[in-house]
Image 1 (cartoon, helix red, strand yellow):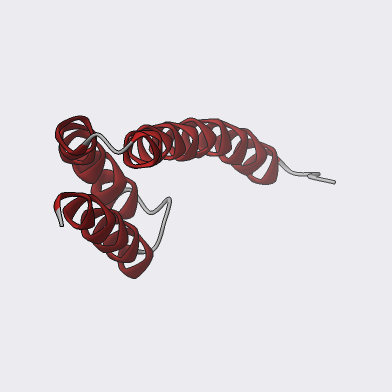
Image 2 (cartoon, rainbow, N blue to C red; image 1 turned 45 degrees about the vertical axis):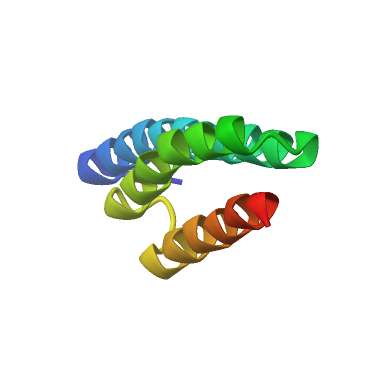
Length: 88
């Protein structure tokens, strides 16, 4: 348990950051889910629009350190391939 003031402050900071990171991860998952639902429905225009909304959100998560940049790029790439495959 934190005994000195600096350790107690660090605990408070970690709690705040954890809440922010949790919200960011949840937001990213929501955007990804919207793209996947549009893909499942087979609607390319809606899926493309959802992907255009999701990509900056995913990459913002990488910038903020919530997800690794390679993970973010991989997710965007795989979603893009799935959206593009709808037209074929």
